[in-house]
Image (spheres, rainbow, N blue to C red):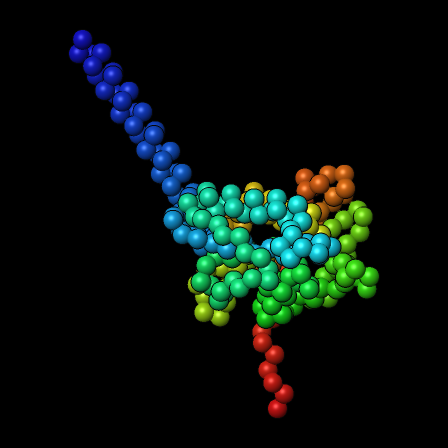
Length: 239
């Protein structure tokens, strides 16, 4: 009888130790995820999305951008935070007040994105077709990334405003499908990105979406780390 009690006690202790170890691992993983995204339990974040460029409705959003928002809202929920969707033509508040996920490249339908590119991502330039003002390419430094039927690109960046605070995650693709690819890449690879850039270093990555018509977002790969050239200092005024 004594041996049985000892064995039961040992099993309870072992089981408790395994559960506690697993709990601590999950807790550390969650804390790293919250630090990477600048999210807190019970806090809020902003989902800023561009208007559907070809729709006459003011608040219309492309279905793939909606899917990207779902991916990003899931990240927020995993961190115990609440996500508030804001249209790109609605006031978003000052940068750094809340973590911001900004979906869509700059353009008439994306004034918030245009502001981020103009003031922070100064080494990046987006170009458009003349007809329909569809996004055609973006250039980082001396390299141009061009939309084609076989390949699309998206710039995925994290940065802060001058006063710090919470980060902005910018997902500026050449199509709504590439915006979705960036959201899924961020959701799947943020642990590796956290190990590389930590919780306080900006980054800018060009992602290549291969054969999107055939594969959707399933074949998304890192094309280039352009952190060194995407963020340029404020030009000094001419003397």
